[in-house]
Image (cartoon, rainbow, N blue to C red):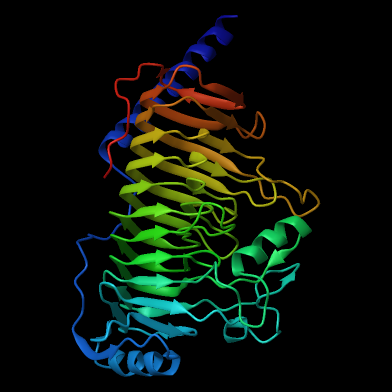
Length: 427
């Protein structure tokens, strides 16, 4: 009995020391973008194009961007003296050191013709079981490329497609009804980029995801405003995937799906990401997952207001898309009028149980200075006793009347119902 007693005391002692160490490092060291980030500077201009509301600019923009990139300069898009503000274009590719400056009032619009974005199988603008038949509107490649300015990039998701009787968004809705996948283009893809910048732009009406950094190391998104209708299906705001050293700041995101979703499929980990000083309107919230096979770690989400989103802070995965999610820091988060303020779910949308297993593990998840000002559902759904969710909370306040789901969860610290304010501060 004495041996068992001392063994029990020993286990408690070392577990306590572990918690103290974790909390110490939580207060002293943050997981985040390893770069030193300052407000972007717009590169020098080498060529200026003038808007024309009745012209296809695809070739002219691509040629100008390519030529200017050789000089490490950007192309400037300006409105015309007679009031034209539009640049209609098909797919645009921006190489290393290239960029576009979209000036205030100017709208760079994706021509709504699926043929322009088709990858070669004539599936773009149709439904199938894959949903990957379209190239994006804009691709940023290589290093030190960028998009700048106070103007607009318009995906025209709500406009009728050429030679079709439906819009991109209607196609996405039909895909849900028919249990198919829509072939719709992303607005902006960043493919294997390094030190890429998206600065001060308005991104609107994307047919699908707005910004997708894929296998990118070094990306700054600063002062961007994403605004697409809440009922536009699968129009995620920003989805870093298998990427690292990313900062998203001073941005406002309202859209029809995840405001931000950090993903890590089978092509690499997502890590060292800072999301700071942002506001989310409608959308599905600040998400990690559901694809986390390669792991997500070292994430700082700080100074964030979520107002009228369906979800607040969410980590989602299942036994076919799982991996390790660890060292996630949420700090100074205000949540208002959100149906599901906190969702940590290891059994999200698991409809392919026969696939190869990839177990989700959520551990070292830190919540500090959290204010949930309106009642909602808080769901902590761990997988099993061998794969418990483990979280650490400090100064965590929940509106009285909220409901809870707790399965296989370890909570270190206290959550109370003391609310001291009526609304969230915008950043």
